Structures are given as structure tokens and as C-alpha cells.
Length: 464
Image 1 (tube, rainbow, N blue to C red):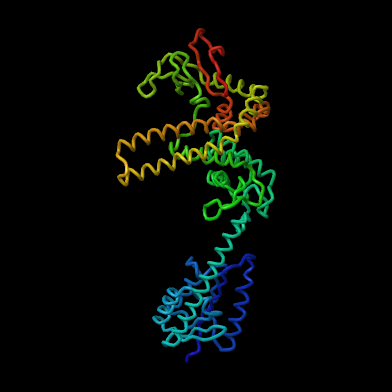
Image 2: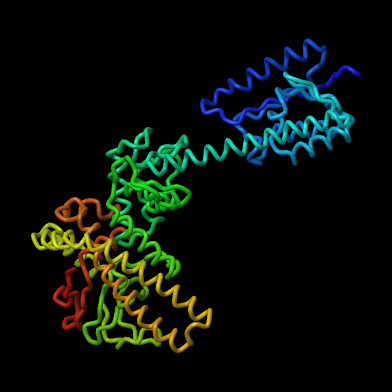
């Protein structure tokens, strides 16, 4: 048999947590010794470090070696044993077909040689691949069971990256990051978008856990993570309470999910352009005031058009009313009235879990009702009547949940009016709006009696 003069050496190891490639280096040392003993000339060493041969994921070095064999530039292959080459029978058949077409029959391993050019050699290769696949399957199942057991015990998941808000042990709370997590949650519940929060944190230079640029997706990842509420998740399902301390309460986590679900249902909105959008009422007809621009002046107006159906009788300068109500809101945050509001709302926090469970019950009944109509168990009239009653109950629960969302926002603001005032100009428009909306239910604008801005026209209605 001809001595190979352009042999390919292939080294692979499935897992290399240290990243030092020590496993493949040991393999390469054995390969070089084997090649020297036989007088084979090694043309190239192909290495896939920290890559599984069973998962089906791409192996760049293996694919390149296969292409070189196919092109006739390699005349033999050296591997540690066959399971380093492949653990999938279908992949072995592909390898054997490429070798046969290229006239490559010599495959050497540290433990045995295989001649893929005859039936016995190919049969043994198939046996090795089948055993390797079975062992990999059993190992994968053991790993899955262990991961499930760890999850059910509330232990943190594996992975190199630490979760934001916790130290590298994934259990100890990082106080500085935990404060940012609470800020993100409270601002989102108050109405700010993940995009606006991400942009503000990026501008402030608040780093992520991995040091990458903060984006809306990273903020949403924090918001959606049950971990920050103390829950352990496995395959997308909450399976236990974690061994770590939560950063936020389960009620606040549910509030986040409800807000996100509501935003998904209503679709995306255009970026906010006016601070008091949706918060002003007409003093003549009670309708909402809408933003409008005339030449160089921004205004809020009661629109009489077909889309708004107002009386058209109220107009007020946007900049002046925004300045006046902002000052009023920030002043009110430092008054005893807001302390009383906050105390009352904290007392309601325990209602959130009950209301959420009630909401889920009505949603389940809605699905059950639809199934009964689909199966013909009830008529369309019966379905509609029952659906209308359930929708009315769902609406009532949603309204109660909405009234409980402001406590999280107020908790961070009450008594901090002066500090907020100092940083007001640096805040995003969405954050400013969220703060005002947490304190101000709405404000009625009365008709003008003088030809100048008159604060007496503005009648605030405060939350609760």
C-alpha cells in the first residue's frame, strides 16, 4: 500500500470550558507520533475545538478537510478514533462516499486502522459510528435530566455569561445593577418604551453585564426574565423558586408582562412628540385635547374634525401648559398627599396576584368557549352571549390592574421632586411623560378669559 504523502490530521473535542485547547493539543501530539512511526507526511492539521460531532452544528475545519479530500489534495486521514471524526452514522456515510470517490482508503486512528476501500473496513466504521451515536444520545439524555433536576432544585443555570443584576456566581445580588433593574421595571410599567429606556441608559454610560452596547432587546430581556423575580426557568417554563434573592416582587414581574401584552395587542406607536399627549381635557365638551402646530407655535387643541369629534372651542399654548404642569407635578411629589397615596397603593399590591389569576381564569374560559362553538356544542348566539359576558369581566379586571400599576413608579419618585427637577432637561420625553402620568390623572383646560397665558384655566385632577 502506498505511503501517504499528503495526509490530513483531524482533531476535535466537544467541550473546552477553559478555552485553552489542551485536549486537542494532546490529540495532535499523538497524531504526529503516529505519522512519524509510519512515515506518513502530514500536509495539514485540521482542528475543531469545543465543537460537538453529534449536535449537527457546523464544524468548519471538518468541512474544509472533507473538501480537500474531495479535491484530491489529501491521500489519507488520521484521527484519534472514529468518534472524533463523527458520531452520526449519516455523516459517516458521507465521509466514506467522499473518500471512495477520491480514492482515499487509508484512515488511521491511535487505536486501530480502517480501510474504507473494502467491506470489512466500512462495516467496522459503521459499527463504531453507531456505538458513538448511541453513547452520545445516552449522554445527552443524562445531561438533560441533570439540567432538569438542577432547575427543579432552584439552582442557577450554566453558561459563561452572568445574568444582569447578579454576580458571577449567579446567586449574589449586585446592588448597583439591581437598582438599575428596578429602575427599568418601574419606568416600563409607567409607560416608557424599552427603546427609550435603552437609549437613556446608554447615554448615561450604564454598562451591560457583557459590556456590549445596550439596546432595546437587552432591556426587554431583563424585563421578561422571571429570574429577577426569584423564579427558576427551564425550557421556557417556571419550575421552581430560585436559591437567589429576587430583585423585584412577583407582582411587579406580572405587571411588566401585562404591560407588554397590552402593547403587543395594541400594536406599535409612533414616537411621542408632545409631553402631555392624552392628559388634557376640554373644559367645554370634556373631549381630549390633541397636539397641533401652527407656524412656530405648538398647541393643544380641542379638534372638531371627524376623527376627534370635539367642540373645537379650546386652545392652549403647549410650551406654557407643559411648563406649568411639570412644575406642579414635581412640587406635588414632595407633599404629604403623595406619601398617603403611596401608602394606600402599597396596601393594594397584594391584590395583583389575585387579579392576575382571575384574568387567566377568564381567558381560559374564553378559549374553552371557542372550542365548544368550533365543535358544534353551542350555537353562534349562545357563543356570542357568553363571550360578551366574559369580555365584560375581563375588561373590569384589566381596569383594576391598570389602577395598581402606578405604585411601582411612585415608590421611586415620592420625596424626590427636587432631584427630578434638577435632571428634568436631560430626561427623554417618554420618561418625563411617565413621571407626569404617574402623578396626574388628567387636567381640564377651561376657556380663555384673557389674551395671555392664564394658569387659572388649568384644573389638575391628581391620581387617586
